[in-house]
Amino acid sequence: MKKDGQRRDPQLTSVAIIGAGIAGTICAWHLHNHKIPVTLFDKSRAVSGRITTKRLDTTGIDMGVPYITQDEYNRLSPFLIHEIEPFLHPLNCNTIKNDKLFTQLVYVSVPKMSQLAKAFSSNIP
Image (cartoon, rainbow, N blue to C red; front, side, top):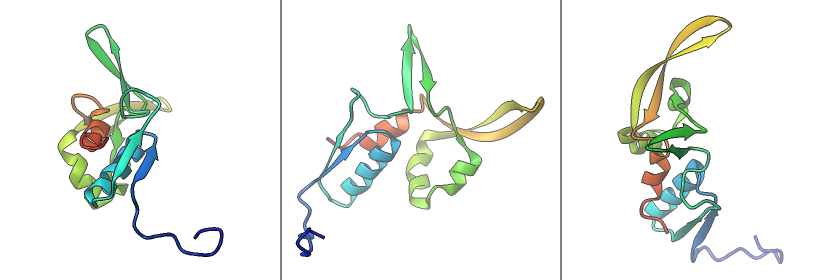
């Protein structure tokens, strides 16, 4: 609602999303798929936010989110799972907690975790 109590025009001319992390890119992708004009902005030169890959010589290191756990994966909406499944690969991950070894199923993006955000933002200015 506007301050004077009148409703806003339901026709959006365009949407600006500030922040090109995974949440911003998925939001922009969703709006774009619903034919709503959207522009994605970020302070960095590339998308992915905290899911970024830093280059070291000829290799890269994933920073931020190294993987998606099975619990996190189970909480995703079906439409999102359908879209990100081609980029995720299951992996058994060994971790030590309280001096005990645990193996859990996790999902990683190949070739790097930032590939998810890049895929969602590929057609968005």
